[in-house]
Length: 342
Image 1 (tube, rainbow, N blue to C red):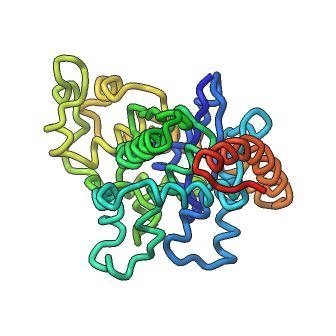
Image 2: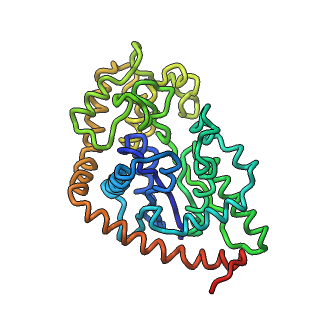
Image 3: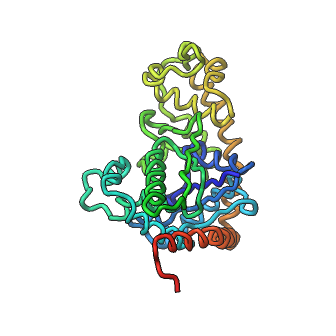
């Protein structure tokens, strides 16, 4: 059976992009796989976090995962910092990974920006921690978005170099699981930018805790263009979307992709059904679908957050079970490296 690992940062309330790009897929992967899911609070502190807010956001993200359908009885859900193997293995990987490898990581350049010299050392080496997250459990597969593929490739390089350096096949080379439609949900205010928690405008995203009125208002105000919805003319002969057509009308195709993903349909089907229609009609249909899909998740999340002890109990049990997997793997690693165990 495949062992799947994935993590999500507790940096604010999850939004529709998180759900369609990751969380919904995590839920689907539970069928037929051994899944380990983690709220990565160690990754969060690569940038300064208010301690009380970090603790609250960790609970909120755990509640979101549970509300979306993660089953903590059949699978494992925990907070990263409660399993010490992540930090221990990350240090070993700091000594395995090469500076040149990290210099090629585009996300560090994006996040550090012009303040690269003032960025934390943790932000620079956090891809090594990501590799440790995966390999501490000898995970075989990792669901990733396009923006995380480079980090998984680094994890594979680290695993292979460790195995070669010490002459023993300790770690598997984890494989990516990349999903199709709407893995990249764009801002409702700018179809060329990814939907983000950090965007100054709350109207750029649909938060998973938004009520029906907020969802309706945000979709109604979502940027479009004056033309009717595109139709089959935007499809290539094989039925896929024409990238040139998408580039010309990014906001229109963003809403189409969201509707298709929420309805488990192909974008081509949506174009055939709604092509030539006015956006006002389509936005009403999209609102109904979004409210029906997200309403139950938001209500369950609010129920869970009203009883933090229930969330904490799930995380504590998940940490105990995660440690049971990671500890013998770490013992093997330490023996291979040559650490004295007394």
